[in-house]
Length: 233
Image (cartoon, rainbow, N blue to C red; front, side):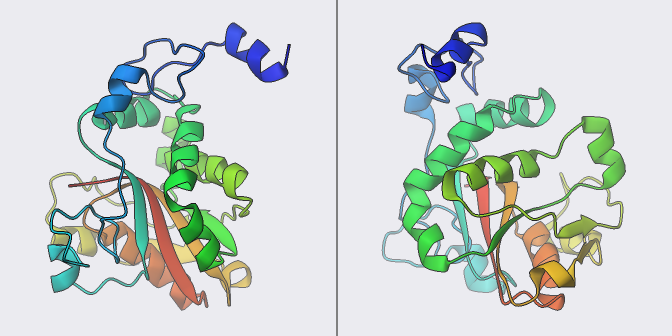
């Protein structure tokens, strides 16, 4: 019996959304939740990766009206339906194993994009140290390691959150940008002249990505893109 099968028997995986034990032919989600999970197709904003309803457009409304510092972003799922519960379990219930399924789907959807960009490293968006200690882990870091295992791109902890910021929920886009001003610091020795793929859990307004990208570009990175587990609609 292979080690993977033995481990599955001892520690049966559960659906990332509904927590039901998965059958041997299910990965990441049970068949019922999987049918409801919306994966981001190629019909997405070429800048931030948000899904588009109009196939004739290349940019979402946000990216048509706002200039982002990052080059491009891609997401795996739409933050709706079962993914709302899945992200809550992933972030607050310690369901680390879900990151493996997220990374596999990311590679299935965007493997050619990863390869074409030629990224030198994956950098997770960091949490403020005290907050990470309370939670016990950084969900972006867990996803980054799983994605690294799938793509072979190394993870580098090259970004630090140096300023504690209030929660972002409920803030307007402008308030989010002000909230994150000077919140990040990058290691110029690590990122100088490198192409960086930044990992985060959910893309909303792009304020976090822009603030972190500013720090990375200021430290000498030549390009910064983003990969997100979920994107808002």
